[in-house]
Each structure stands twice: as C-alpha cells, then as structure tokens.
Image 1 (cartoon, rainbow, N blue to C red):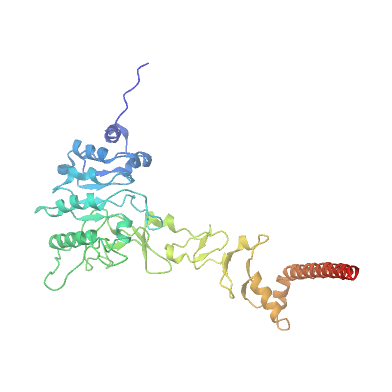
Image 2: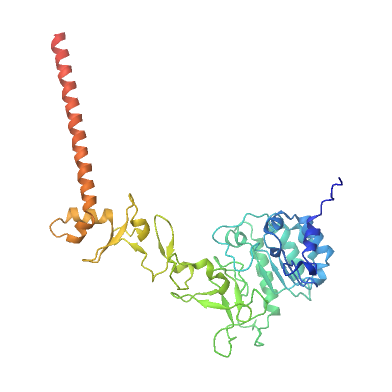
Length: 386
C-alpha cells in the first residue's frame, strides 16, 4: 500500500477556498477577507507561524487581503505576520483570537501572541503614507494586563491613534478638528485601553457622535456583551430591558435568564439574582430566586425545596423573605411576637433543633456520668494506697 503524502496545513486552508466546498470558505475568491474562524477550531489552534506566513505569501496577502481575522490561532507568536510588513492595502486586523459576538473577558484565552513580534509589523503598516488600516482589535490580556514598566503597547496605541485621527472622515463627512482638542479614536484609558471607538467592527466605516439615521437614532452602537462597535447597517442591536445598554442580536444567547418562560432581554450585568446553591442567574423581573432580608443569601425555589439546603422562602402572612436559619433565629429571639405562619414554616426545623439540643444534653449527661465514675475509681485507689 502506498502511504499518502501528508498535506501541509496551508493545503487544508487553501482547500477551503475551492468553490465546490460550499459556503464554508476561509476567504472569498479574491482573498478580500481571510478569516481563520471559518475552518475547524482545532485546526486553527494547531497552525504555526510558518503556516500563517506560507498562507500569506501564497495568496499575496500584502496586496490582496483587506481584512485579516486570526480567529482561534492561539499557537502563533506573531512572527508569521512578517509578510504584511509595509502593507498598504489591509484595512482591518483582528488579533483578539476570538470570533465575532464572543466575549473574552470572562476567561482570557491562552495564547502566544507577542508584542515584540507583532508591534513592529503594525508599526511598519501605519507608517506608510498610503496606509489603509482603519481598525485593529487586540487580545484582551494585552489591554487589561499592560505592564507599566513596559509601555511599548501604549506607546504604539498613541502612534496608531495619531494615524487614525489624521485619516478620520465620518460617514457624514465630518473631519476631526485637531486644533481644538486631542481626540482619541483608540482609548488610552484604564479599563478601556486599546478599544477603538467611532468605527464599525464589521465594515470598518467611521462614525461620529453626530451620525444619526432618519429616525434620529445613532448609527453606531457599542455592544455591552462582546465590546464591539457595530453600525446599524451591519448588525441589528437590541436594548437591555433593565438598563441603557445595547447588545448585538447574535449576543443575546449569552444573556439568558434561568427562567425558561422569561422573554426579557437583559445584559449580563442585569442578571443579578444568582442562586448560592446552583449558581443560575435570573433577571430582576423573575421571582424564582429569593433573597433573604436578614443575611442577603439568595436561593432559587427549586434548591430551597431540597433537603439539607438552607433555603429562602416568603411568608404568606408577614410577607418577609428569610432563609431558614435567619427565620429560626428570629423566632427563637422573639418568641412572644413571632409570626405564627413563620413558626409553622420552621416547625420541622424547631423540632430538629430541639432534638439536636436533647442529644447534646444526653451526651453531656453521659460525659458527666463517665467523669463521676473515674473520680470514684481515683478515690478508691487513693484510699487503698493509704
């Protein structure tokens, strides 16, 4: 049998571009967009810098590719981006390593992208007189774990911002007035470091705060979930039902209330009712998760009914929400003025508490009896020795 010659990762990538593959293409036929998120995640995670470099060289990316998304390429260091040095055609580079509508703050991706290798390539691009770059997105750990002793990333952001400001023209035709202020298209503020504003993450068009549609609403919105800006032409947005935040339609599945019958659309920050037992979350309108007025413990209805759980219940008479322990403590300390319904609710607990105390008394009596016996034996030994 003849052993087939193994194909290189590049050959597999190129195969995704053949028309007969169908809609699952890594790029369009003219290589306008190169998105590694359109191949298997496991394959993208195994690609090396040599694989990336070979792909960029084979398709003449420096002259053809306008949008590059390194989705799931977690094994590369950035040296494979060298073929893009001095590129004047590329308009968008996404280094976040995650796909669209995927939040990354909850758990930083393990990756090997290095500022030492990537920033020189980016600098060579933005320094070109005919630079076309309009939008960059960075890995979250670069943005949130910036080392004050190594300011290279922030220094690059300053240079990149200057280039953006110089080339900025909003969809309405407005240009930035550099003489009156120092605008920041790319944020340099702590917590938002490296987030690019006024730019759609999909089409890379510029929008200013004055850009509105025929209905008077803004044309550019920032998604509260994935932290990307999208214009209304590219992505539909929906408002949070509890606050002023807006979210991409495709990000809504990340904000499900634990109540299966709930139809509210809320952002993750507004899912504040979390059960201390099962850790599920509910929105403010759902009553499936009750908070104790005494200790602020939260427990859902389902977990509260389980045996051995310090559940939280609402009294139908005095209308107080308390966990079993707080209600028991209240009834014991205010025996004369306790709500009769509250006493009935914890009757089983009172019985168990009395049984526990009875067992403790019996244990103490047994210990006292054992001590009396030992004392009697000691006295008998003392008299015998005398």
